Image (cartoon, rainbow, N blue to C red; front, side):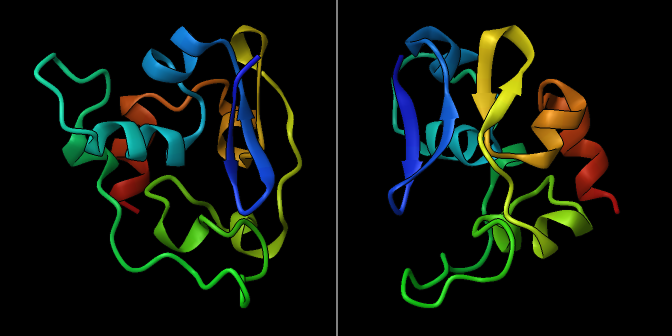
Length: 115
């Protein structure tokens, strides 16, 4: 099963079609929304837009290293690093939002951006 990695840590685990079209992990969604393509994108680039700079791999923040740039981050993301756990659809994600909300869909992104 393919996985998405960040600095040698697994963040999501799913079958290829799931990663590309139904990812539970916000960073994977953001990366795929930025890929140039002639076909329709499965994720809306405006809703997955990442702001700021990635953290330095030698000075990672406390908690989830993606939290400072994540459009769906909650307070817990900045306090504790999530572990890879099973989420909806037989996939796995190291993401508190995905683990407690099942799937990070457009509604979660919209709600998170308005807080």
